[in-house]
Image (cartoon, rainbow, N blue to C red; front, side, top):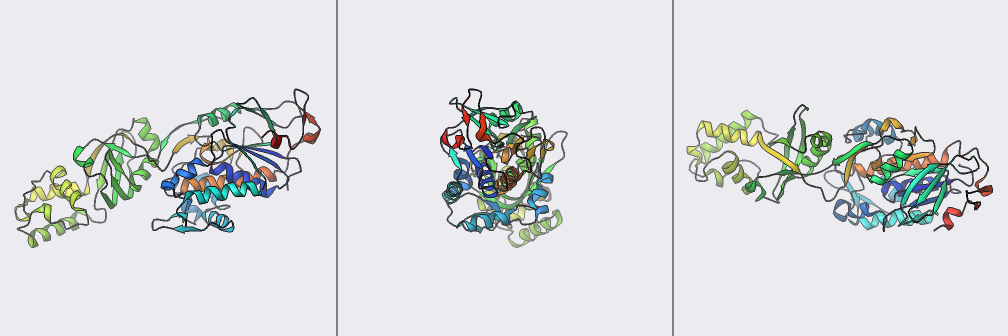
Length: 445
């Protein structure tokens, strides 16, 4: 257990910040823990996620397989997941009266389908373990103290108030302020760019199908001087282009390359990935023989919606809407097959994914000890969540990163073998000569 008087300051009132603060408090009940959130409310991203339902985690319980769902940071997380993974997340919430359910695609939500269930649980737990949660408490600077009589860190707030801490946990997500504070403590920053976004495709006929979905499809991305990327899953047509799990996963894996090429690329859609060319040709020829007098637009042999089938025939294969199966030529048949298996679209930009706010970039992972989440450049400084150069695909994986890194950082802060070689903070004085007592950070609120 950490010695009495340990002062922990958590910067960032999101999922990772709350989880880290609670883990530290549970590991060291005697510690003074203050959580600072610059905004008006805490846990705002948790409230908004999953369309207001909160996709807490994913039912992938194999650490090695779980780590493969992270375009950046998977290797570092594999060991971390052996210590705290989705099963532990489920158990953590269940012990606090929150049950989770698993949907068909593996995503896990509270059984209430209400993100407030998760928010209320985290806030109640923070109160129970004695964490002082302060909102509208924006941090403007963190510095390391030089006098041995002072705690290691001096934290300045926008209000002018100064707090002192033995341990700092930075869980500021993709906030530029968090990057600036970390850089001031000696860290490099991998430039952040968006991850998890939709694709803009300027095709009025396609956009007229907004709301139509297809599953599964395989989408492949071609960028200059980059290896092709591919994902399989549901696809959603929108009024600006393409969305859905397949596109969002593809955007995560291609985030940096797409940013480099200003979100210009060629997207190839295989509308029937479970059928090869020869099998597809056989199906079409059988349909031609069976429904010879019918128009192609009225008789689809594939599990595609009528509107999508008609779009592919008329606007991708360039076939007349009056064409009958009997009059389908060999050349037209091959054109249709190519439109079904290799349908190319020009991506001209990116949209946003309203349920996720994810970036790749942040603190370079070699600068962090992933056994403890402590900085290798600034002892006593810890990181958790999206401030790290870690990001996952859609489906609850980014929240799992927050829970895992927050839990490990919280445990590590509280259980560090060396807290401080200086005297008890109760005997210290500040630059202005004021007494710094262990409860001071609590009283400042």
